[in-house]
Length: 366
Image (cartoon, rainbow, N blue to C red; front, side):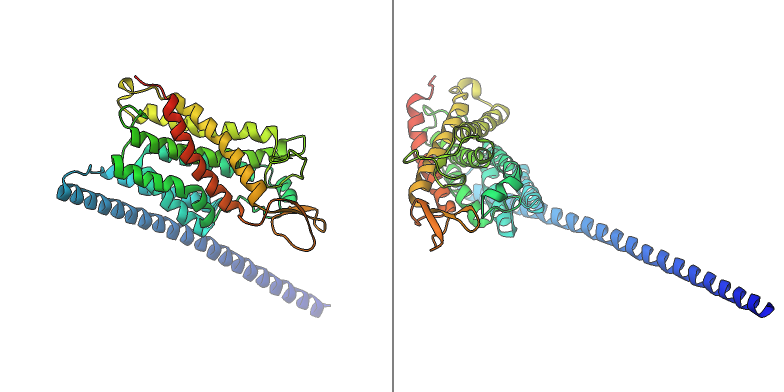
């Protein structure tokens, strides 16, 4: 009996040591994990500081080059260092945030950074219009994502736009922003055809391209989900499955008008904030109507090109609309000439060329 008690006492002591050792190991492991988290946060903070320092150095370098060129040529308008800094920092923040939220992939973030930098340094009205188009389109793309995934075989979570998609939506505005800086220099101006015809034409052309992209995106992202009736092919007005290229609905057309109007309102409000001589210039309120018209017309042009130049078929095995012709796909409409990115690019080019010329005829004069 004493022997058994002694054995029991030894076992209890042994178990106690085991529990203490396990507890110490757990605390040590927890401490190591906590230390790793602290190190990661510290490294992230240092990285952000280094990136910010580099951005400041780059913006100052750009400013020095700008001042040197202005002094050498004598006819160039120097850009303030604050404008350089804003034009670099803000697009970097927006592009990195878009990448984190899966609105952009790696190449899309780099492409968006270039587009954002050029539009921002050219004109703050260009920047805010681009920003509102990007933010609203990203939100609407994620809205009711599960429902869209069941309708679209190429749907990606968050959109995840790559550099090709960024280029097709942003190439025309970027080129116009560069031409605007060559013609007028960086800065904000009132849209007034009687005083600055060429620069005003470029501003409206850029606004038309962004409003066109916004109108098409709003129509496709909202109309496919909210419309109670099936879409109709814009060329024949026959009922087609949801997701058919060239299919339109009344809900989609209304939201294309709202999308363009939203971009126009953004441009108009930025004009009120940053343009100084609005009191001696032509009225700026037509910008809002112009944006809405560009959004609606852009959606119509995009739908027409999609119905004629883009293939649409029905895959019976998956029960979804597809854009590639195969032997198992039933033909619905269009020809395999352009893809969706090319259609977006052509639509923005057409709207950017046509609408400013038409606007010149009815824009108010003083």
